Amino acid sequence: MREIYQEMGIGDRVYELGQACEEKLRGRFAAIDQTAEYNQLKVIRAMQSRKVSAECFMGSSGYGYNDLGRDTLEEVYASCFKGEAALVRPQVTCGTHALALALMSNLRPGDEILSPVGKPYDTLEEVIGIRPSKGSLAEYGVTYRQVDLKEDGGFDYDAIRDAIHEKTKLVAIQRSKGYQTRPTLSVSRIGELVAFVKKIKPDVICMVDNCYGEFVERTEPLEAGADMIVGSLIKNPGGGLAPVGGYIAGKQECVEQAAYRLTSPGLGKEVGASLGVMQSFYQGLFLAPTVVASALKGAVFAANLYEGLGFPVVPNGSESRHDIIQAVTLRSPQALIAFCKGIQAAAAVDSHVTPEPWAMPGYDSEVIMAAGAFVQGSSIELSADGPLREPYNVYFQGGLTWPHAKLGILMSLQKLYDAGILTL
Ligand SMILES: *Cc1c(COP(=O)(O)O)cnc(C)c1O
Image 1: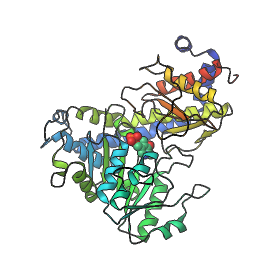
Image 2: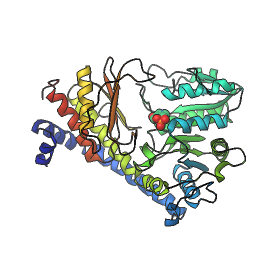
Image 3: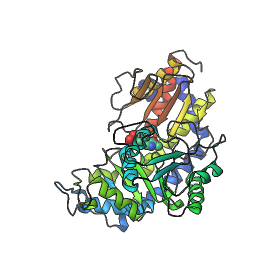
Image 4: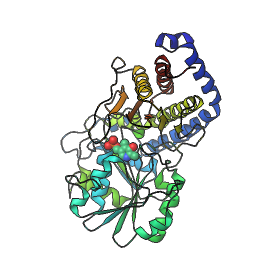
């Protein structure tokens, strides 16, 4: 083993640190495997109950009428995530599109959105119109209100109560911290928040941005009382195989609204050819629980390895996990660049290219990104990125297999060591 790591460029010291760290994490890894086992059975049960068969993989073209695979897959998603219905389509281009669809279809002029968990994910600022943007909900007369989390990460219940009024139609709850420093919400905390909101206004729609959260726990937010969950298929539930797509699952009424907006009033879910992607959607969902487990092991391993070397990490090495993102504060541009070079060098695809910091639209500093992915931009695959500004945080996520995640993290450490940034 040591030899093949050496051939890959991992020196003895880094290898040994990695082995020692992994040894200490046996208990954590066993718990992650148990969650994967539970969720694997949940997925298989959903597929069996809907009688998934080879015909489901055939796909359709044109209008896509009577597409057995597409319709069955939507039932499988609904069953797996405990919703009444689901919309799972390659025509939903990404997570932002799925969220925009969920919002725009369920809201009407005069309605208000409330985010009780602080600022939403960057791309939603333009969807909602927090940053003025063509076609935003603000342009259609939908207003937005926000209540920030308290200093300690708790919900500001008093302010939430004050913010709910007759116009409040939808409460948007983002499960993952995304690229903020607040804690990620567990499903049970989401449940507490939904119960509180529903007590004040029972008919309000509680929508959860579920990106990066699927299969991390044994239950999903619909089981905790949410009305609608929304996510991307090139993150957790696509299992690394789905080449595109997004989903919305939950109440029949919410999903139907989204379907009529995605295609057209009068058409809804009846149209939308599945082309050739059905097998990868099914097989990706089948693999998702163990893929998410691999990514989680990578995140926990990185947290512990870097924490042990004195770097601040969020979440810390021992915290419970509710999404697959890991932040490491690297404290210098050299360290951030070296870390990303390591992740890139460990990839099966594009390992020969060198990531460089670059100006990106929407960011006020340069950003460096490392990804060698089979599916472009897929962040369930091993990837890392960070803005080149204090305190030089890197955000690290994904890994379709644990050995790949491990190699990537060891390689990042090796690059830091080689650059003379730390001594081991
Ligand atoms: C990734 C993500 C999105 C947006 O998804 P894209 O597929 O990048 O458009 C929205 N919310 C959260 C929390 C995310 O992690």
